[in-house]
Amino acid sequence: MSFFDEPEETRTAPRAAAPRRRPAGGGRRPPGADRQAIMVRRLGLVVIVIIAIVLIAVVVNSCQVSARNSALKDYNNSVASLNARSVQTGGNFFKVLSGGTSDPTSMQQGLTQAVGDASTELSDAKSLSVPDEVKGAQADFVQALQMRKDGMGNIANQVPPALQSQTSKNAIDTIAAEMAKFYASDVLYKEYSVPQIVGALRAAGISVGGFGGQQLNSSQFLPSIQWLDPTHVASALHVSLPSSPGQPQHVAPGVHGHAMQSVSVGGATLSTGGTNTVPASPPPTFTCTFTNDGANTETNVTVKVTVVGAGISGQAVVPQTVPGHQYTAQVTLGSSPPKGTYSVTATVERVPGETTTVHNTQTFQVTFQ
Image (cartoon, rainbow, N blue to C red; front, side, top):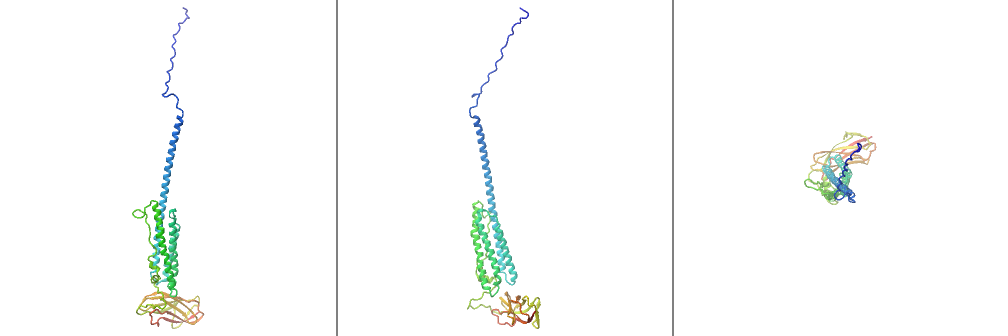
């Protein structure tokens, strides 16, 4: 054997790789499996979106309902408050109207103040925020306050002539007629406006009345239907209506009458024993002071100043005088008297039942310059 001859090495055959086990069901996904999974995920997302939308809608609707209910409650509270203010203003108005007329100027100021308050209340009512459900109620409420304001203004304008004996009858009748506006305003508010508000509150599920419920204000403006009667109005104003033709006027028993005490012009008291100098222009105002020296209360007491021979005079009416009390009447002449010296008389005119009038008049010699 040759040195170079090497014996053949026994070669080991390479190990075959272990066969891969095929997954159960085969190695390939069934057709459409991926698409189905995507659709399931999409469907889940759609459901989530729908739920979110529903929740948002519920929240939004809840907020809208809450806002609407709050608006209805606020409106009801505003109307109740305004009507309470209006009724209070009416109370002040009637208090001034029937509180006595010894000071007509103060009385007129009180009536004017009440009319101003009514105008403010009407303006506040017109500026309210009004939900759609109570638009009709708002229109009726504003109309009611408008009628109250107009009636008060017209009555205030009629009070001065009502206190004058020459014009009292017509003025008193007009005042009684204007009172009907107050009655109508109460009907409009209580029978139309308030029921509409109540209906809107209940339709919204809001409780009305009772503990925790919405409170209403149904107070009325006109204190009594007696104010529709001219006789009651005249009595409240302490005015005596003229008797019907042919009907005797009732006169209380006892002494009736007045006595003129003094007369002044511009703060200077006129003298009955000499000549007094008074400016002719502008038409002078005579301050006449007199006393009820009888035993009865008198109404519509007329005080008259006359420039004898010049055809010029003036008069004023004191609504009421009480026995033993002193009063003043501001009498302005109807025009400027001509320059010169004239006899001037100041008279408290006779009242029913007065039999002695010697103290009713004072006479002065006046030089108008």
